[in-house]
Length: 194
Image (cartoon, rainbow, N blue to C red; front, side, top):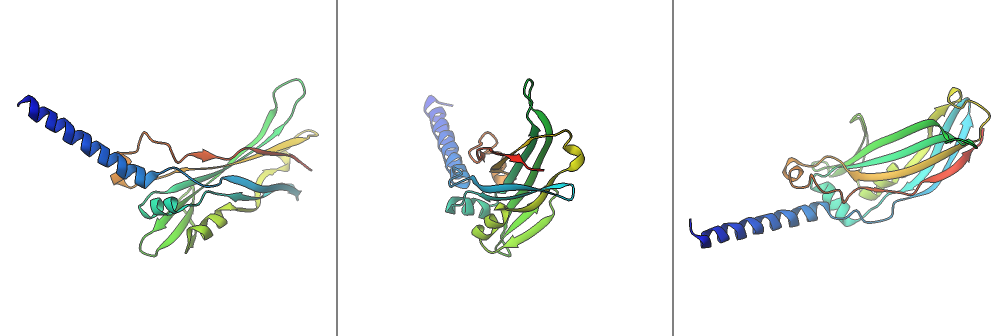
């Protein structure tokens, strides 16, 4: 093999690698848009702490295209309840994580929302409708009275996150090193009234 043919193979290899990287960048892209907790509150009723919140998840045409190309998005809602202590670290009372996934069903042309056990929670005609449903938390039980020992006060902290979930087989090998889709909101903290 001559030196010119070796350089030709290298150029071809670099061109193929660049083409793959561009395809991955199109399928992945940056996770654009707002990710914030608009409101949150807890109510202690009948021995159960219920969480009500509204989360604004990012929405863009690029996200819609990625879902339609087979990428799944995973959404997390992290909740912690702690009891502040004056002369020691805060006591962790509850750590709760609600996970859901959003995908696109190409045949029905609908967005499908599933829980962490792969149980379908609903289907939606638009990405806007699916994200609105994802962002509504209505009286979600996060703790029970026996977990709240002592006099309190207790601090509740809430954070939302979104990340890339499952990938189609064709993209999995190309994007294993990339994490451009992982974003989290700021923690929102308040005092739990009992």
